[in-house]
Image (cartoon, rainbow, N blue to C red; front, side, top):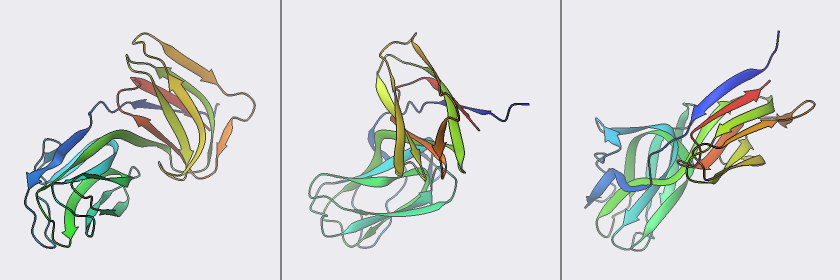
Length: 202
């Protein structure tokens, strides 16, 4: 019997949304943002794939930070501190699958909103494995999927591009023993740049 495992991913299609987690509002000193944007339900956010949090500040929040609490693409607890921006957008570096809270550390100078950018990530397999093949269905928007090990922001091992055609496919077979991912297989991509992807690993 074959030891190859097939994992099929349907791409995230939720576009960049600057206030999808928390709409613009005044936030008190060391207070939590209200998680009531279009991407939330019941005071929290749950995404189909990991997403990067953005904080939009109307005033100068460069001397304070915002603590994001939730889970990562593996479902493990994750906390990130994002330094605020001066009348602009601050972008996190971690991918969150869920968000339970966002709290100001300091006193925001004006209205603050929170959302996500257009980058998404997911896990194929958490442990050591070898990538054996990929079958990808494109969309009308071309893009590149980055395959990484350790985490969605870990070490890039290889990349695969899609084409701008809703009927195009990519069928990649990796010869011999495949490509080794010593500490997990993760993907990172821009939303809507592929339709589905089946990854074969062993």
